[in-house]
Image 1 (cartoon, one colour):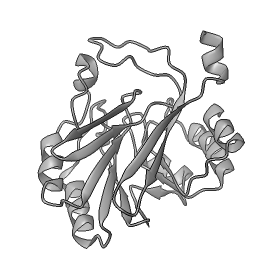
Image 2 (cartoon, rainbow, N blue to C red):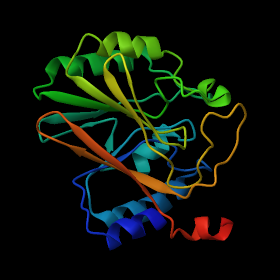
Image 3 (cartoon, one colour):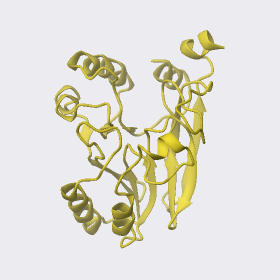
Image 4 (cartoon, rainbow, N blue to C red):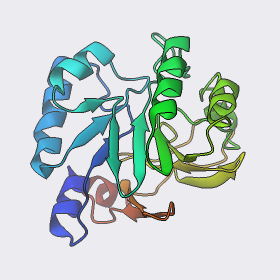
Length: 226
């Protein structure tokens, strides 16, 4: 709620919202309905990918009209969402059928640059407990995208922290949580004291990505912990 309030009160305007999973915590139909009340306020196109806390069937039903692991084209870029949801598991996997779908999408791409969006980190973050619940078959993903130089960026959620590095020539970007953050490079699960946040992504026609993390320091949740 605080993130949406902050966006509405600011001057920066988006063309699309990409929700990178773990959209609810209690896995109920009502939770997705409550989420939709908030996100619909933005009046923007929505794309979603499922996280380990999500129930994909409920997500698709209650967020009908939002793009589910879909794509968006603009400014010379194609943005593609993919599922890393593994039923009953906290870590993630890209199933063979999903890898085949992404390969087919990349074959058909007619833009000069591509960004992929998924939930689980496709690289190690230097955090022992988090790296144990990242993307299991990351090698399969990089083998695939390595055959398509048009893939410039991979964006993930899950880790509740910022990240911005390169792997195999691809920019890997992690977006923090709109709720609580996890402390980077910790051996065990540890909450950070940073406030809720969201990441702005500006895809340029020349293939460049400009990005900024916006910390909501006026958040009611953050203020109560300060």
